[in-house]
Image 1 (cartoon, rainbow, N blue to C red):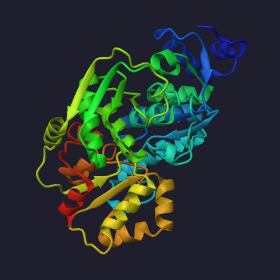
Image 2: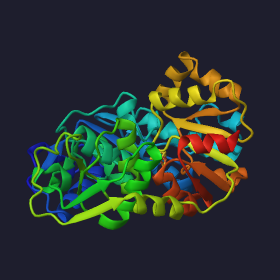
Image 3: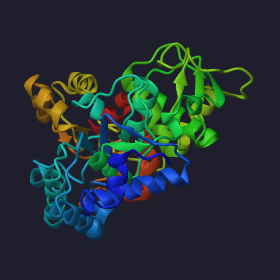
Image 4: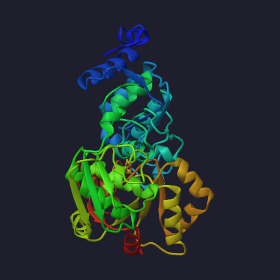
Length: 394
Ligand code: F3S
């Protein structure tokens, strides 16, 4: 790989131990994937934030880095943490868990990372531009930025994202290169998609079929950004789709070559079967929205539905701290609280320890959450659209 004079200094340890370690990691990654050079990145999103997934070894690794003076060079955000960083007591998160989660956040803060934890950084002050190179980690955020925004990122692991943040560069390979962003399979959609859960079910079904290929959708007549985030999140969870194109909707769809591609057809039958497959539970004891983190529009819709109602089961809406602030200002938080629900910031149903909080069956409208909850949180899942889930809670 070609390295600049400065980059050679990084590798030789002339800029200190931390930079040397981090840059070496990037060079090794670049060598594995035959990158020709390093490229500057505009922003980073680091995954591996929850104490649930990191445990003590990960926490100590971060503290060690922070104590050795590691500092990020560019705008760096974090993936959801294991709890609401402010309201954890009120929501019943375990005290010991909270103590360790706060140690992790302190280490990140010491490194200059913005300690706001969200899988929708693009809704919370970290919005890349079309064709900007970035180094993001969380699979739904990677999918959204590549597909809906047209920015360019591989799906980084926690350490490689951190290394990119500290060095300001990433190896040039994979989805950073235009030739690698061409679709590999066509998906013809012949079913009406109304709810976000329909997009989640479609995404889950397609992810299973195409694995890590790049799909090109036709037949999706319209979709807002909330629905596209649901589609991409589910495909990244059941498969490993990091980029998709939708005819007439996503920015690169007109620029890519679709000639001669094999086609998969999806209709009513496939969607119905996917809903059935994702339903492993009967009655939810908690309902959680906001996977990926809810937008202000999704929260306002839920506030409309919940206005004047009384919930009999806990309902959480997971979102970023920034969006929660605005939801509070708009009075949505009050409406949701009066109904008995909670807007939960900084975390989500998958990375928080809900199984330790006594929940066994979770209701979700997200294909991604439905995919991970059984394995990560030992949950049975009720997968349905927002209206049916709220009916279940009243
Ligand atoms: Fe985000 Fe958690 Fe879902 S990180 S995409 S809300 S599983």
